[in-house]
Length: 211
Image (cartoon, rainbow, N blue to C red; front, side, top):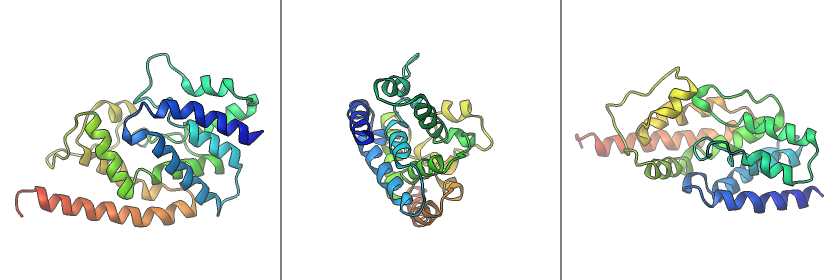
């Protein structure tokens, strides 16, 4: 039964993600699922809850959600889920978003796995690609070396100002390595973090006007 529910959920969410830009499309979900399964090789967790949360975690993302829309709940209501399962999946999803550093703490191993799996897809080479894909979709500057990264901002402040894509690295992506909560997540994050640092150094060298 759980396999059938996952397949039904996949079909429903894919139609939604296929309407998003490349930073949050269906391929993003596939990568996060791969990350989650890799982490579960080292962590004992309820795989059904993890997979369902991965599939649904971005359908109601504030960056894409229309006013009054709740696709996450609407999809779960079409599936043969108990109220407890809906609640547990919803709680996992609530802990995924960064929200300018004010996200909901991941209190269960399932939430920690999904949070780490999603954050791993925000860093490294794929994180770089996704950042510039989103920035391009929102007509943001590639970089602005004079722009100061914000610190201690509220969630509203984090979402409100259209900073350059490079500034996003300093406001979020470079912070994620130290916020991983599973051993596997931390291990994978180390190399991806180093790659981002190297990329930013090279980009700065090529664009600061001194080379």
